[in-house]
Amino acid sequence: MSATIARDARRSLGGRAAGAIAPAHAERRRLHVSSLAADLAAVLVSYELATVVFAWFHHGELRLIGERPDWGLPFALLAILGVYLALGLYKLEAYVSRPLHLLTLARGAVLALVLTAFFSFAVKAPIVTESRLQLFSFFVVFFLADVVLRLWLVDDAYKTDVRVRRGGTVVVGYGADSSHIVGRCRELRGFAPVSVFEPLDKRRNGFDAEPALLERLTATEPAPRQVVLVAGVLGHKATFDLIAAAHARGSEVYVTGRIVGPLDTTRMLMRLFEMPVMRVRGLPRRDASPSRAKRAFDVVSSAAALIVLAPAFAVIAVLIKRDSSGPVFYRQTRVGAGGRTFEFLKFRSMTVGNDAGEHREYVTRLIGCGESGAGAADPSLCSTDEWGRPVYKLAEDARVTRVGRFLRKYSLDELPQFWNVLRGDMSMIGPRPALPYEVEAYHDWHHMRLELTPGVSGLWQVAGRSRVGFDEMVFQDVIYGYNQSLGTDLSLCLRTLPAMVVGRGAA
Image (cartoon, rainbow, N blue to C red; front, side):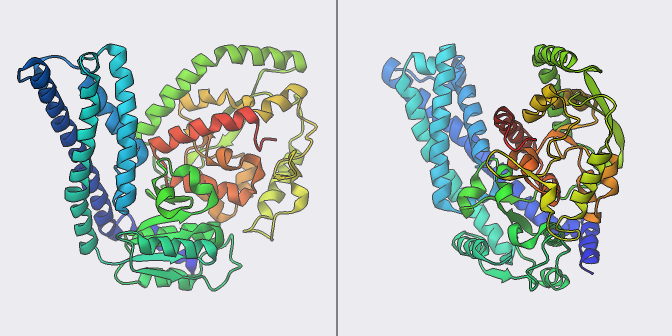
């Protein structure tokens, strides 16, 4: 029954629920545009004022911005917009806490001042060559003007939206994390009143959400402005069911949990809720193609990687040939987005002509005995790393060569997949592409990861790699799809590098 409710919620997003979602999106869009307009106005007015005052006191003349070229203005504008975007100051959540908003504005102004000064000195812009005080005074005036515009005019628009859209916050979960979230929501503007929905069955981790819980969330009137899901106690499949139900009602959906931290790229939500939280941007669709921005990022980054890593490719190829006989590259059929297959490319790390039967049996058992299968993961299916932590990989695989073991530890065998990214079979960030016999063993909800384009790296590689069980890996892959953006992809790419260098969680 709960699965039917969740499916109906997903289908409704394309029709009747689209109108319900519009107010939340419109509110975010209005605040984004208003905040951007306020920043632009503050920059132009403050820069003009600093220019006029400096010229009058030092040269006894009235000088306007356009009278002479000055690279200081575009540098300042780009620095402010870039830093503010990185700090989350164009998000709706920036207006939820006025003290945090003010503190973040101050931090952003200081960082933008440092960046502007660096580039202005580099090109010898008049704003620093004639008077360094002019640059400093510009940012002081800008900060004061921006505080007035944002915390007065734009903030008033946020308060109006809160009054117009009735409904408070529903927290779904139980335990210490749930209590903490409830306390924080009661302190944040626009989140009160707060209600708590507790699942009756605490043992449903890995299964569908409780029908009574879904029905209660669906029947709540007025529709909640926000729904916060404590994923750590709700389970994987249940969390996805509840996301669909809440999203269909037009609510802003937030998910808490240890592994979602890397998806909050601006750290704004972390500072608001004082624990790892991500916001659901949208539900992935099986027939959806990657956005133009994501595809452009994939093409540029994969092409650059292939060029830069060409010498490393040559060295690895020599090492593989010297270590064992056989080809340098290993080609394999994998399952991509929508269940479509493609030829997957890796550096060969195993002996030629090996039997995959043992690995197939291992993977089938690992998938089948997870939380949504017969029970908890079988301890015999995991080895341990040097710190005694479980590693869900086939231990001491005799098929792996000596060089191959090194390549796998630091994920160097994955480098040829940049060619798959350039071809469009894969993305830089996404779920790891599945083997056909893995897909055959999937439970129904595992197929959700096939709604996404497979990637070279992803949340799984950053948050756990082979230290997590299969169900948790699928959860990480799918939850990334709910929060995918260009900023998220760039952040996960940068976070992947340290994981590769130290070989954390690899096997």
